[in-house]
Length: 167
Image 1 (cartoon, rainbow, N blue to C red):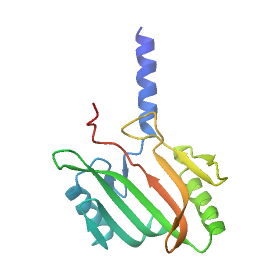
Image 2: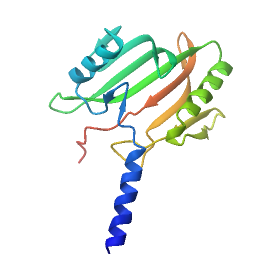
Image 3: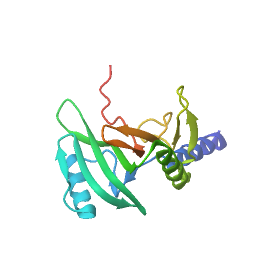
Image 4: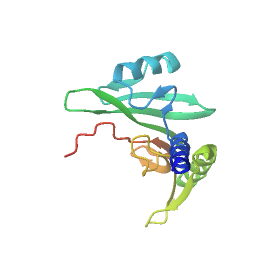
């Protein structure tokens, strides 16, 4: 019985080790004010913000230049905000360039055992890691994105569901 408990404990610790707990020095699940203060210390004043999102433009992180980094929040019925999603995007000159950039970003995230997947339209994306709020879900995605003003590659940490208000 002790061996079984030890093995279960070991597996739980191993799985938690791959869960994304923080990004840019901010723990997921942090309050809006805690997140904003930590980000201001790291990147300076944000370029845009409201209660749902804090946005920085043209910042480097981990040796990569991102055209935008968005920190998003989830709120409970009491109005408490939780940092639950971070999207880091790189503008690219073409879809082909965005695909190459996405592959490079995924390889940089190899500690999350990134796995390449293909959508029904033939486009690929990468997923890996573990959602810190639900160990049955992936935690990180790298994909090609199209915006109204162009395209690029993006890393998405989340969204993670910190507000458990289901019936």
